Length: 279
Image (cartoon, rainbow, N blue to C red; front, side):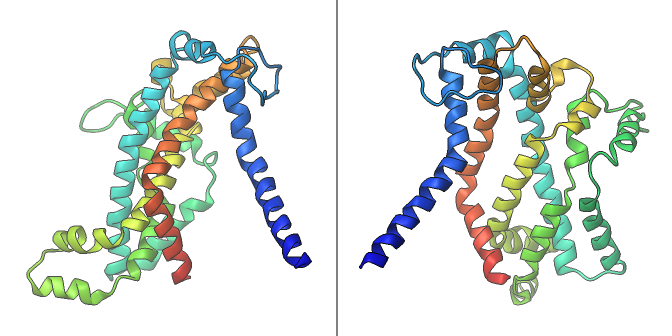
């Protein structure tokens, strides 16, 4: 009986410790942002003595955080949709088809995960500055300069490829016997069975694009097109900026990611569990 009590106490102690480690910093951010008292540099306030929305109002209206939020949302929504679509099509070809050079293509895609962003920064900047042949202008200083380089992501392609390989080929053959085209098989057979993996790819893709700092820095010079990560870095370097205001902008920047995870949590959990069972 004594051992049972010790086990229960140890379990709840570990839960409490994990809660403090993972939830504590977020509570500190919220408390500091909503506190009227000005925090010291590098300090978090965990107890709100005088609640206030002044720091959020200043961040939203004076610093125009809403405009940077809109820029980030435009880039992340279009970029995530295109990324998941391209990744699903590439994964379908790699998982369900056999063609010459398939191993080389797979290796080339996976090798991009081994290169840090700093390695391709200069070549990417030069590419974005080049004039395109049809429109006779570059995409530099446009939303497309921040979207197109992240449309193809090796992680999403690899994730969906491994998931699609586990789908029985009998379903695909039965659809062909019924007269389904390749696109119909992809849309009505493969995609519905891949929803858990698509949810996982969407969440990771959203977070990857949302956190991009180097790419927007290379892609745009116009401050009106800056995204949230760029403005956060600029505010952090500003010695005159109140810590509470900076943290308020940080809290605003976390809200979209939080809601995306809540919306896709069911598919994310299924995707992770499916991967664990297959592994």
